[in-house]
Image (cartoon, rainbow over all chains, first blue to last red; front, top):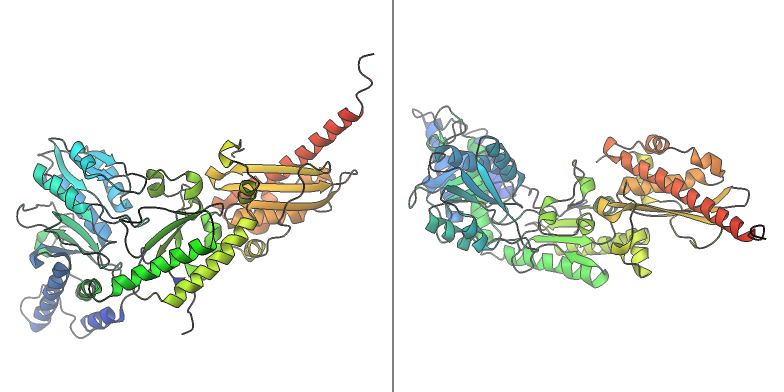
Length: 407
Length: 139
Protein backbone atom coordinates (compact mmCIF):
# COMPACT_ATOMS: atom_id res chain seq x y z
CA UNK A 1 0.00 0.00 0.00
CA UNK A 2 1.26 3.46 -0.86
CA UNK A 3 2.26 5.50 2.15
CA UNK A 4 0.16 8.54 2.96
CA UNK A 5 2.14 11.61 4.06
CA UNK A 6 2.72 12.97 6.56
CA UNK A 7 2.82 9.73 8.52
CA UNK A 8 1.02 10.27 11.81
CA UNK A 9 3.22 9.35 14.78
CA UNK A 10 1.78 11.79 17.30
CA UNK A 11 -0.89 9.63 18.94
CA UNK A 12 -0.26 11.13 22.40
CA UNK A 13 -1.51 14.47 21.09
CA UNK A 14 -4.65 13.00 19.61
CA UNK A 15 -5.89 9.98 17.68
CA UNK A 16 -8.09 9.74 14.60
CA UNK A 17 -11.68 8.63 15.14
CA UNK A 18 -12.07 4.91 14.58
CA UNK A 19 -14.60 4.46 11.71
CA UNK A 20 -16.64 2.22 14.02
CA UNK A 21 -16.93 5.13 16.45
CA UNK A 22 -18.12 7.44 13.68
CA UNK A 23 -20.71 4.85 12.56
CA UNK A 24 -22.00 4.55 16.12
CA UNK A 25 -22.39 8.30 16.66
CA UNK A 26 -23.84 9.47 13.36
CA UNK A 27 -27.50 8.43 13.89
CA UNK A 28 -27.54 10.56 17.05
CA UNK A 29 -26.97 13.70 15.01
CA UNK A 30 -29.93 13.16 12.69
CA UNK A 31 -32.51 10.49 13.51
CA UNK A 32 -32.09 10.07 17.25
CA UNK A 33 -31.48 13.70 18.06
CA UNK A 34 -33.59 14.04 21.19
CA UNK A 35 -32.67 15.82 24.40
CA UNK A 36 -32.03 13.20 27.05
CA UNK A 37 -33.81 15.51 29.47
CA UNK A 38 -37.11 15.20 27.59
CA UNK A 39 -38.88 12.67 29.78
CA UNK A 40 -42.21 12.62 27.96
CA UNK A 41 -41.52 11.34 24.47
CA UNK A 42 -39.58 8.66 22.61
CA UNK A 43 -36.92 11.05 21.27
CA UNK A 44 -35.85 11.82 24.82
CA UNK A 45 -36.10 8.21 26.00
CA UNK A 46 -33.90 6.95 23.16
CA UNK A 47 -31.27 9.60 23.84
CA UNK A 48 -31.32 8.68 27.53
CA UNK A 49 -30.95 4.98 26.72
CA UNK A 50 -27.98 5.68 24.46
CA UNK A 51 -26.27 7.72 27.18
CA UNK A 52 -26.76 5.00 29.76
CA UNK A 53 -25.38 2.36 27.39
CA UNK A 54 -22.29 4.54 26.83
CA UNK A 55 -21.94 4.98 30.60
CA UNK A 56 -21.82 1.19 30.93
CA UNK A 57 -19.20 0.92 28.20
CA UNK A 58 -16.94 3.51 29.85
CA UNK A 59 -17.45 1.93 33.29
CA UNK A 60 -16.52 -1.49 31.89
CA UNK A 61 -13.18 -0.16 30.61
CA UNK A 62 -12.08 0.91 34.09
CA UNK A 63 -13.89 -1.61 36.31
CA UNK A 64 -16.37 0.95 37.68
CA UNK A 65 -20.11 1.09 38.27
CA UNK A 66 -21.90 3.04 35.50
CA UNK A 67 -23.31 5.42 38.12
CA UNK A 68 -19.75 6.53 38.86
CA UNK A 69 -19.19 7.99 35.37
CA UNK A 70 -19.73 11.73 34.85
CA UNK A 71 -19.54 12.94 31.26
CA UNK A 72 -17.56 16.14 30.68
CA UNK A 73 -16.22 18.07 27.71
CA UNK A 74 -12.84 16.36 27.98
CA UNK A 75 -9.95 15.60 30.27
CA UNK A 76 -9.13 19.24 30.98
CA UNK A 77 -12.61 19.71 32.38
CA UNK A 78 -12.35 16.40 34.25
CA UNK A 79 -9.05 17.45 35.84
CA UNK A 80 -10.53 20.81 36.77
CA UNK A 81 -13.67 19.23 38.21
CA UNK A 82 -11.62 16.76 40.26
CA UNK A 83 -9.29 19.36 41.76
CA UNK A 84 -11.69 22.28 42.14
CA UNK A 85 -14.57 20.02 43.13
CA UNK A 86 -12.67 18.28 45.93
CA UNK A 87 -10.88 21.46 47.06
CA UNK A 88 -14.13 23.37 47.44
CA UNK A 89 -16.14 20.55 49.00
CA UNK A 90 -13.49 19.48 51.51
CA UNK A 91 -11.92 22.89 52.24
CA UNK A 92 -13.13 22.75 55.85
CA UNK A 93 -11.27 19.48 56.34
CA UNK A 94 -7.96 20.72 55.00
CA UNK A 95 -6.27 22.81 52.37
CA UNK A 96 -3.24 20.76 51.38
CA UNK A 97 -3.01 18.90 48.06
CA UNK A 98 -0.22 16.68 46.69
CA UNK A 99 0.65 16.41 43.02
CA UNK A 100 3.79 16.01 40.90
CA UNK A 101 6.05 18.22 38.81
CA UNK A 102 5.32 16.33 35.58
CA UNK A 103 1.51 16.56 35.55
CA UNK A 104 -0.40 17.83 32.53
CA UNK A 105 -0.99 21.57 32.42
CA UNK A 106 -4.67 20.96 33.18
CA UNK A 107 -3.56 19.88 36.66
CA UNK A 108 -0.64 22.28 37.17
CA UNK A 109 -2.51 25.35 36.03
CA UNK A 110 -5.57 24.44 38.12
CA UNK A 111 -3.21 23.97 41.07
CA UNK A 112 -1.77 27.46 40.57
CA UNK A 113 -5.31 28.82 40.50
CA UNK A 114 -6.15 27.06 43.78
CA UNK A 115 -2.94 28.38 45.36
CA UNK A 116 -4.27 31.87 44.81
CA UNK A 117 -7.40 30.82 46.69
CA UNK A 118 -5.35 29.76 49.71
CA UNK A 119 -4.72 26.08 49.02
CA UNK A 120 -1.24 24.72 49.54
CA UNK A 121 0.36 22.30 47.06
CA UNK A 122 3.27 19.90 47.29
CA UNK A 123 4.77 19.19 43.85
CA UNK A 124 6.60 15.88 44.14
CA UNK A 125 9.82 15.62 42.15
CA UNK A 126 10.49 12.59 39.93
CA UNK A 127 13.58 10.46 39.44
CA UNK A 128 15.64 10.39 36.24
CA UNK A 129 13.16 7.97 34.66
CA UNK A 130 10.23 10.22 35.52
CA UNK A 131 8.98 7.97 38.34
CA UNK A 132 7.58 8.83 41.74
CA UNK A 133 8.48 6.58 44.64
CA UNK A 134 5.19 5.85 46.50
CA UNK A 135 7.10 6.54 49.72
CA UNK A 136 7.38 10.19 48.58
CA UNK A 137 3.58 10.37 48.68
CA UNK A 138 3.47 8.81 52.15
CA UNK A 139 6.06 11.31 53.39
CA UNK A 140 4.20 14.28 51.90
CA UNK A 141 0.83 13.49 53.51
CA UNK A 142 -0.06 15.82 56.41
CA UNK A 143 -3.09 15.94 58.69
CA UNK A 144 -4.61 18.63 56.46
CA UNK A 145 -4.01 16.79 53.16
CA UNK A 146 -7.31 16.30 51.36
CA UNK A 147 -6.28 15.17 47.87
CA UNK A 148 -3.45 13.58 45.94
CA UNK A 149 -3.40 13.82 42.13
CA UNK A 150 -0.77 11.80 40.27
CA UNK A 151 -1.02 11.03 36.58
CA UNK A 152 -1.08 7.39 35.55
CA UNK A 153 1.04 7.62 32.38
CA UNK A 154 2.90 10.70 31.23
CA UNK A 155 2.00 12.21 27.86
CA UNK A 156 5.59 13.11 26.90
CA UNK A 157 7.77 10.28 28.11
CA UNK A 158 5.14 7.55 28.58
CA UNK A 159 6.35 6.75 32.08
CA UNK A 160 3.76 4.75 34.02
CA UNK A 161 3.48 5.40 37.76
CA UNK A 162 2.84 2.81 40.47
CA UNK A 163 -0.75 3.93 40.87
CA UNK A 164 -1.75 0.85 42.89
CA UNK A 165 0.81 1.56 45.61
CA UNK A 166 0.17 5.31 45.63
CA UNK A 167 -3.59 4.68 45.79
CA UNK A 168 -3.17 2.25 48.70
CA UNK A 169 -1.16 4.81 50.68
CA UNK A 170 -3.77 7.51 50.08
CA UNK A 171 -6.61 5.15 51.03
CA UNK A 172 -4.91 4.16 54.28
CA UNK A 173 -4.41 7.82 55.22
CA UNK A 174 -7.90 8.94 54.23
CA UNK A 175 -6.63 11.10 51.36
CA UNK A 176 -8.72 11.23 48.17
CA UNK A 177 -6.76 9.94 45.18
CA UNK A 178 -7.21 11.31 41.66
CA UNK A 179 -5.35 10.15 38.57
CA UNK A 180 -5.26 11.57 35.05
CA UNK A 181 -5.73 8.27 33.21
CA UNK A 182 -5.91 9.77 29.72
CA UNK A 183 -2.77 8.31 28.13
CA UNK A 184 -2.90 4.79 29.50
CA UNK A 185 -6.46 3.75 28.69
CA UNK A 186 -6.65 1.16 25.95
CA UNK A 187 -2.88 0.67 26.19
CA UNK A 188 -2.52 -0.97 29.61
CA UNK A 189 -5.21 -2.43 31.93
CA UNK A 190 -6.84 -0.11 34.44
CA UNK A 191 -9.12 -1.01 37.33
CA UNK A 192 -10.34 1.61 39.80
CA UNK A 193 -10.89 -0.92 42.59
CA UNK A 194 -7.70 -2.95 42.55
CA UNK A 195 -5.74 0.28 41.91
CA UNK A 196 -7.38 2.20 44.77
CA UNK A 197 -8.47 5.11 42.57
CA UNK A 198 -11.17 7.56 43.75
CA UNK A 199 -11.27 9.92 40.77
CA UNK A 200 -10.00 9.36 37.21
CA UNK A 201 -9.95 11.63 34.17
CA UNK A 202 -10.78 10.14 30.77
CA UNK A 203 -10.61 11.64 27.27
CA UNK A 204 -12.27 10.28 24.11
CA UNK A 205 -9.89 11.72 21.54
CA UNK A 206 -6.91 9.84 22.95
CA UNK A 207 -8.71 6.51 22.45
CA UNK A 208 -9.91 6.96 18.84
CA UNK A 209 -13.02 8.92 19.75
CA UNK A 210 -13.90 12.53 18.90
CA UNK A 211 -12.61 15.68 20.56
CA UNK A 212 -14.87 17.53 22.95
CA UNK A 213 -15.96 14.66 25.16
CA UNK A 214 -14.49 12.98 28.22
CA UNK A 215 -15.48 11.68 31.60
CA UNK A 216 -14.60 11.80 35.25
CA UNK A 217 -14.86 8.65 37.32
CA UNK A 218 -16.19 9.58 40.78
CA UNK A 219 -16.16 6.81 43.40
CA UNK A 220 -19.57 6.32 45.03
CA UNK A 221 -18.75 3.95 47.88
CA UNK A 222 -15.93 3.08 50.27
CA UNK A 223 -15.32 5.94 50.33
CA UNK A 224 -18.03 8.08 48.74
CA UNK A 225 -16.39 11.07 47.05
CA UNK A 226 -18.26 14.37 47.02
CA UNK A 227 -17.55 17.25 44.66
CA UNK A 228 -18.65 20.85 44.42
CA UNK A 229 -19.84 21.24 40.78
CA UNK A 230 -18.31 23.89 38.52
CA UNK A 231 -21.31 24.22 36.20
CA UNK A 232 -24.78 25.02 37.52
CA UNK A 233 -28.04 24.54 35.66
CA UNK A 234 -30.33 21.67 34.80
CA UNK A 235 -28.67 19.21 37.15
CA UNK A 236 -27.58 16.68 34.52
CA UNK A 237 -24.90 14.09 35.36
CA UNK A 238 -26.07 13.70 38.97
CA UNK A 239 -25.85 17.44 39.40
CA UNK A 240 -22.08 17.37 38.93
CA UNK A 241 -22.11 18.71 35.39
CA UNK A 242 -25.14 20.68 34.28
CA UNK A 243 -25.70 21.17 30.58
CA UNK A 244 -27.62 19.27 27.89
CA UNK A 245 -25.71 16.07 27.28
CA UNK A 246 -24.07 15.85 23.82
CA UNK A 247 -25.61 12.48 23.00
CA UNK A 248 -23.63 11.77 19.84
CA UNK A 249 -20.36 12.60 21.61
CA UNK A 250 -21.23 10.43 24.58
CA UNK A 251 -22.21 7.54 22.31
CA UNK A 252 -18.88 7.95 20.55
CA UNK A 253 -16.93 7.89 23.81
CA UNK A 254 -18.85 4.76 24.80
CA UNK A 255 -17.97 3.00 21.56
CA UNK A 256 -14.34 4.17 21.80
CA UNK A 257 -14.16 2.79 25.35
CA UNK A 258 -15.55 -0.55 24.19
CA UNK A 259 -12.90 -0.73 21.45
CA UNK A 260 -10.20 0.34 23.92
CA UNK A 261 -11.17 -2.55 26.17
CA UNK A 262 -11.01 -4.95 23.22
CA UNK A 263 -7.58 -3.57 22.31
CA UNK A 264 -6.18 -4.92 25.57
CA UNK A 265 -6.97 -8.49 24.57
CA UNK A 266 -7.18 -8.64 20.75
CA UNK A 267 -3.47 -8.28 19.99
CA UNK A 268 -3.49 -4.53 19.29
CA UNK A 269 -1.20 -3.75 22.22
CA UNK A 270 1.35 -6.39 21.24
CA UNK A 271 1.35 -5.04 17.69
CA UNK A 272 1.81 -1.48 18.92
CA UNK A 273 4.65 -2.49 21.20
CA UNK A 274 6.35 -4.42 18.40
CA UNK A 275 6.20 -1.38 16.11
CA UNK A 276 7.58 0.89 18.84
CA UNK A 277 10.40 -1.57 19.51
CA UNK A 278 11.10 -1.83 15.78
CA UNK A 279 11.41 1.96 15.55
CA UNK A 280 13.82 2.17 18.48
CA UNK A 281 15.90 -0.81 17.31
CA UNK A 282 16.09 0.62 13.78
CA UNK A 283 17.25 4.03 15.00
CA UNK A 284 19.83 2.54 17.35
CA UNK A 285 21.23 0.31 14.59
CA UNK A 286 21.83 3.32 12.32
CA UNK A 287 22.71 6.24 14.60
CA UNK A 288 25.03 6.88 17.54
CA UNK A 289 24.44 9.16 20.52
CA UNK A 290 20.72 8.57 20.95
CA UNK A 291 19.32 8.99 24.44
CA UNK A 292 16.06 7.42 25.60
CA UNK A 293 14.02 9.75 27.80
CA UNK A 294 12.00 8.04 30.52
CA UNK A 295 11.88 4.46 31.77
CA UNK A 296 12.06 1.52 29.38
CA UNK A 297 10.46 -0.90 31.83
CA UNK A 298 7.62 1.29 33.14
CA UNK A 299 6.54 2.74 29.84
CA UNK A 300 3.46 2.93 27.63
CA UNK A 301 3.77 0.38 24.80
CA UNK A 302 3.11 3.08 22.18
CA UNK A 303 5.61 5.71 23.38
CA UNK A 304 9.15 6.49 22.36
CA UNK A 305 10.90 9.70 23.41
CA UNK A 306 14.45 10.11 22.15
CA UNK A 307 17.05 12.85 22.29
CA UNK A 308 19.01 13.04 19.04
CA UNK A 309 22.12 14.72 20.47
CA UNK A 310 23.56 17.69 18.52
CA UNK A 311 20.39 18.23 16.44
CA UNK A 312 17.83 20.78 17.60
CA UNK A 313 14.27 19.46 17.84
CA UNK A 314 12.50 21.95 15.63
CA UNK A 315 15.17 21.59 12.96
CA UNK A 316 14.62 17.82 13.10
CA UNK A 317 10.88 18.24 12.65
CA UNK A 318 11.42 20.55 9.66
CA UNK A 319 13.78 18.00 8.16
CA UNK A 320 11.39 15.09 8.61
CA UNK A 321 8.26 16.89 7.51
CA UNK A 322 6.85 13.61 6.15
CA UNK A 323 6.48 12.51 9.78
CA UNK A 324 4.05 14.14 12.22
CA UNK A 325 5.78 14.01 15.63
CA UNK A 326 6.38 16.46 18.45
CA UNK A 327 9.38 17.81 20.31
CA UNK A 328 10.35 18.92 23.80
CA UNK A 329 12.55 21.58 22.27
CA UNK A 330 12.16 25.19 23.31
CA UNK A 331 11.82 26.34 19.73
CA UNK A 332 8.54 24.49 19.37
CA UNK A 333 6.96 26.17 22.39
CA UNK A 334 5.83 29.76 22.70
CA UNK A 335 7.62 30.08 26.04
CA UNK A 336 11.05 29.31 24.52
CA UNK A 337 11.65 26.96 27.45
CA UNK A 338 12.34 23.27 26.81
CA UNK A 339 9.95 20.64 28.19
CA UNK A 340 9.29 20.97 31.93
CA UNK A 341 8.80 17.21 32.12
CA UNK A 342 12.29 16.49 30.80
CA UNK A 343 13.78 19.16 33.06
CA UNK A 344 12.00 17.72 36.12
CA UNK A 345 13.64 14.37 35.31
CA UNK A 346 17.03 16.06 35.31
CA UNK A 347 17.59 15.66 31.56
CA UNK A 348 20.39 18.05 30.52
CA UNK A 349 18.86 21.13 28.98
CA UNK A 350 21.17 20.58 25.97
CA UNK A 351 19.55 17.18 25.39
CA UNK A 352 16.03 18.43 26.09
CA UNK A 353 16.40 20.71 23.06
CA UNK A 354 17.03 17.65 20.89
CA UNK A 355 14.12 15.46 21.98
CA UNK A 356 11.45 13.98 19.72
CA UNK A 357 8.32 12.19 20.92
CA UNK A 358 6.84 9.36 18.87
CA UNK A 359 3.36 8.02 19.59
CA UNK A 360 2.43 4.82 17.77
CA UNK A 361 -1.26 4.23 17.13
CA UNK A 362 -3.90 1.68 16.22
CA UNK A 363 -3.48 2.41 12.52
CA UNK A 364 0.32 2.62 12.34
CA UNK A 365 1.88 0.09 9.95
CA UNK A 366 5.25 -1.64 9.73
CA UNK A 367 5.88 0.10 6.39
CA UNK A 368 5.38 3.48 8.05
CA UNK A 369 7.86 2.62 10.81
CA UNK A 370 10.45 1.42 8.31
CA UNK A 371 10.03 4.61 6.32
CA UNK A 372 10.44 6.65 9.53
CA UNK A 373 13.69 4.87 10.40
CA UNK A 374 15.16 5.52 6.92
CA UNK A 375 14.10 9.17 6.89
CA UNK A 376 15.32 9.88 10.42
CA UNK A 377 18.64 8.19 9.75
CA UNK A 378 19.24 10.27 6.64
CA UNK A 379 18.14 13.58 8.17
CA UNK A 380 19.87 13.20 11.54
CA UNK A 381 23.11 12.47 9.69
CA UNK A 382 22.53 15.54 7.52
CA UNK A 383 21.87 17.78 10.53
CA UNK A 384 24.88 16.42 12.38
CA UNK A 385 27.09 17.18 9.38
CA UNK A 386 25.87 20.74 9.80
CA UNK A 387 26.24 20.75 13.60
CA UNK A 388 29.31 22.47 15.07
CA UNK A 389 28.71 20.49 18.27
CA UNK A 390 28.93 17.12 16.56
CA UNK A 391 32.14 18.28 14.85
CA UNK A 392 33.64 19.40 18.15
CA UNK A 393 32.76 16.14 19.88
CA UNK A 394 34.28 14.15 17.02
CA UNK A 395 37.45 16.27 17.45
CA UNK A 396 37.54 15.22 21.08
CA UNK A 397 36.29 18.46 22.62
CA UNK A 398 34.35 18.11 25.87
CA UNK A 399 31.35 20.39 25.32
CA UNK A 400 30.94 20.86 29.07
CA UNK A 401 34.42 22.42 29.27
CA UNK A 402 33.74 25.05 26.60
CA UNK A 403 33.13 28.65 27.66
CA UNK A 404 29.99 29.39 25.64
CA UNK A 405 29.08 32.95 24.75
CA UNK A 406 25.40 32.80 25.57
CA UNK A 407 23.31 35.55 24.10
CA UNK B 1 5.01 27.31 12.41
CA UNK B 2 4.50 28.56 8.86
CA UNK B 3 7.72 29.93 7.41
CA UNK B 4 8.53 32.01 4.35
CA UNK B 5 9.66 30.09 1.27
CA UNK B 6 13.02 31.83 1.29
CA UNK B 7 13.68 30.64 4.84
CA UNK B 8 12.64 27.10 3.96
CA UNK B 9 14.88 27.17 0.89
CA UNK B 10 17.89 28.25 2.98
CA UNK B 11 17.08 25.55 5.52
CA UNK B 12 16.56 22.73 3.05
CA UNK B 13 19.42 23.78 0.75
CA UNK B 14 21.84 25.51 3.10
CA UNK B 15 24.63 27.41 1.33
CA UNK B 16 28.28 27.11 2.32
CA UNK B 17 28.06 24.44 5.02
CA UNK B 18 31.47 23.33 6.22
CA UNK B 19 34.63 24.21 8.07
CA UNK B 20 37.93 25.93 7.33
CA UNK B 21 41.27 25.59 9.12
CA UNK B 22 40.76 27.76 12.17
CA UNK B 23 44.54 28.14 12.61
CA UNK B 24 45.10 29.60 9.15
CA UNK B 25 46.24 33.24 9.21
CA UNK B 26 43.62 34.36 6.68
CA UNK B 27 40.65 32.68 8.42
CA UNK B 28 38.52 34.35 11.07
CA UNK B 29 36.28 32.12 13.22
CA UNK B 30 33.27 33.17 15.28
CA UNK B 31 31.44 30.73 17.56
CA UNK B 32 28.41 32.15 19.38
CA UNK B 33 25.45 30.79 21.32
CA UNK B 34 25.33 27.89 23.79
CA UNK B 35 23.99 24.33 23.62
CA UNK B 36 21.86 25.02 26.69
CA UNK B 37 20.08 27.83 24.81
CA UNK B 38 19.40 25.51 21.89
CA UNK B 39 21.59 27.25 19.34
CA UNK B 40 25.29 27.44 18.52
CA UNK B 41 26.60 29.06 15.34
CA UNK B 42 30.10 28.73 13.94
CA UNK B 43 30.92 31.12 11.11
CA UNK B 44 34.28 31.18 9.34
CA UNK B 45 35.54 33.76 6.85
CA UNK B 46 38.53 33.62 4.51
CA UNK B 47 39.77 37.19 4.12
CA UNK B 48 42.34 38.49 1.67
CA UNK B 49 45.16 40.89 2.58
CA UNK B 50 43.10 43.61 0.94
CA UNK B 51 40.30 42.94 3.42
CA UNK B 52 37.93 41.25 0.98
CA UNK B 53 35.87 38.30 2.25
CA UNK B 54 36.69 35.65 -0.32
CA UNK B 55 34.82 32.73 1.20
CA UNK B 56 32.49 31.89 4.08
CA UNK B 57 31.49 28.62 5.77
CA UNK B 58 29.13 27.81 8.60
CA UNK B 59 27.97 25.05 10.87
CA UNK B 60 24.93 25.60 13.08
CA UNK B 61 23.17 23.69 15.84
CA UNK B 62 19.75 25.24 16.16
CA UNK B 63 16.26 25.51 14.76
CA UNK B 64 15.41 25.96 11.09
CA UNK B 65 15.52 29.75 11.42
CA UNK B 66 19.00 29.64 12.96
CA UNK B 67 20.30 27.42 10.16
CA UNK B 68 18.67 29.60 7.49
CA UNK B 69 20.03 32.81 9.09
CA UNK B 70 23.58 31.44 9.06
CA UNK B 71 23.23 30.23 5.48
CA UNK B 72 21.98 33.64 4.38
CA UNK B 73 24.76 35.51 6.15
CA UNK B 74 27.42 33.47 4.31
CA UNK B 75 25.84 34.51 1.02
CA UNK B 76 25.59 38.15 2.06
CA UNK B 77 29.24 38.57 3.02
CA UNK B 78 31.02 36.84 0.17
CA UNK B 79 32.92 39.38 -1.97
CA UNK B 80 32.34 42.21 0.50
CA UNK B 81 34.97 44.20 2.33
CA UNK B 82 35.32 43.89 6.08
CA UNK B 83 33.93 47.38 6.45
CA UNK B 84 30.82 46.52 4.44
CA UNK B 85 30.30 43.25 6.31
CA UNK B 86 30.50 45.03 9.67
CA UNK B 87 27.48 47.11 8.62
CA UNK B 88 25.23 44.07 8.18
CA UNK B 89 22.61 44.06 10.91
CA UNK B 90 20.31 41.42 12.24
CA UNK B 91 17.31 43.34 10.92
CA UNK B 92 18.57 42.80 7.34
CA UNK B 93 18.58 39.04 7.93
CA UNK B 94 15.24 39.04 9.74
CA UNK B 95 13.58 41.01 6.93
CA UNK B 96 15.06 38.92 4.17
CA UNK B 97 13.85 35.65 5.75
CA UNK B 98 10.63 37.15 7.18
CA UNK B 99 11.48 35.73 10.59
CA UNK B 100 8.53 35.55 13.00
CA UNK B 101 9.00 37.60 16.22
CA UNK B 102 9.99 34.58 18.37
CA UNK B 103 12.80 33.82 15.92
CA UNK B 104 14.39 37.28 15.76
CA UNK B 105 17.10 36.10 18.15
CA UNK B 106 18.33 33.73 15.40
CA UNK B 107 19.22 36.75 13.26
CA UNK B 108 20.90 38.43 16.24
CA UNK B 109 23.01 35.33 16.66
CA UNK B 110 24.00 35.41 12.97
CA UNK B 111 25.07 39.06 13.26
CA UNK B 112 27.06 38.23 16.41
CA UNK B 113 28.75 35.30 14.65
CA UNK B 114 29.72 37.54 11.74
CA UNK B 115 31.23 40.20 13.99
CA UNK B 116 33.02 37.59 16.09
CA UNK B 117 34.58 36.04 12.96
CA UNK B 118 35.77 39.41 11.66
CA UNK B 119 37.19 40.38 15.07
CA UNK B 120 38.99 37.05 15.29
CA UNK B 121 40.59 37.71 11.92
CA UNK B 122 41.60 41.27 12.85
CA UNK B 123 43.09 40.06 16.14
CA UNK B 124 45.13 37.42 14.31
CA UNK B 125 46.35 40.02 11.83
CA UNK B 126 47.36 42.41 14.59
CA UNK B 127 49.19 39.66 16.47
CA UNK B 128 51.04 38.70 13.29
CA UNK B 129 52.03 42.34 12.67
CA UNK B 130 53.36 42.68 16.23
CA UNK B 131 55.31 39.43 15.91
CA UNK B 132 56.83 40.57 12.63
CA UNK B 133 58.12 43.87 14.05
CA UNK B 134 59.51 43.22 17.53
CA UNK B 135 63.05 44.51 16.93
CA UNK B 136 62.31 48.21 17.35
CA UNK B 137 61.77 47.86 21.09
CA UNK B 138 64.52 47.88 23.79
CA UNK B 139 67.99 48.87 22.55
